[in-house]
Length: 314
Image 1 (cartoon, helix red, strand yellow):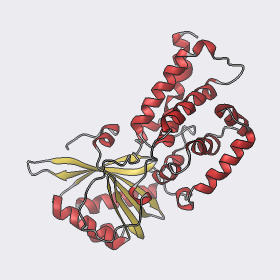
Image 2: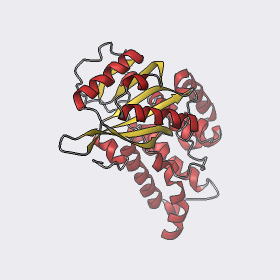
Image 3: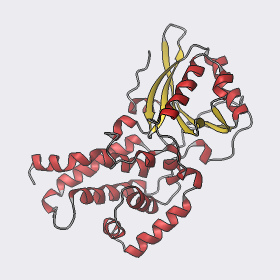
Image 4: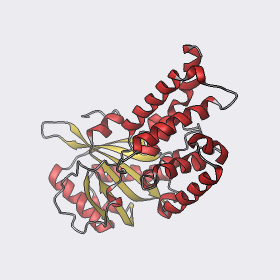
C-alpha cells in the first residue's frame, strides 16, 4: 500500500478512533498516544492488509482495540470524585488535591469533528457515561462501545476480539447491567437552545457573583465536583455555600468563556488577577436536563487546559 493511499484510507477515521480510545481510557492524552500507536501499527502492517477480509475501518478498530486493552492492563480506572464515596457535608473543608488518583479528563468538542457526522455520537461522550464505563472490565467496555455506540455486529466484534459471538453477547449483557440508569439518562446536548439559555444565565450569574440567581438554575439535588479535589457536594445549599466560599477566596468580577466538552455545555472560568486582567482558573462542564443544571464538574488541571487550547489569561 503506497504512502499516499495509506494516508487517504486511514486519516478519515482518526477523529472517531480518538473518541473510541478516549471512551476506553478516560484520558485525552492517552487516547492521542494510542491513536498514534494504532496508525503506526497499521502502517507497519499495511502490506498484510487484505480488503477482502475486512474494511479499513474494521481493521483499524481491531488494532486500536488491542492497543487499548494492552494499555489498560493493570491500570486503575479513571473516576470522578462522585465515584469514590459519599458527598461531603462541609462546604468549608480543606481542598487538598489527590494527585495520586488518575482522574477522568473531559474531551474537547472541537476534537469531535463535524457535529453532523454521526460516526462520533456525541451523546456517548457524556462525562457521566464515560465515568460509568470506567467501572466496567476493559473487554466489557470495548464490547459495549463497539456494539452499542459504533454499531458493529456481534460477529464483527467477535472477530475484533478473537472470541466467539456467544462471548460477545454475554459481555454485552453484563456491560449493560453494569452501567447505572443515571449514566444512561438523556441530557441536553451543548447545542440545545434551552440548555444554551440555561448555561448563559448561569454564566451571567457567576460573572455577577449573584449566587441566589445561580442557585435558581440548579435542580434541588444538583452535584458539584472538582477533580483533583476528592470532596464533592450534592444539593443547592452546599453548592451555594461552596460558590460563596470561592468568591470570598478569589474575589468577584470573574470572566466566563463558553466552550464545549463531551457534547455538553462548558465554560472556561477566569478569576480576577490582582495584577490586572483575569487568569485561567478552571474549566466547568455542565449537565443540563429540563432547563436546569443537574451537575457541574470543575477541572483545574493544566493538562486539561492544554487539551482545550485555553488561553492562560483574558
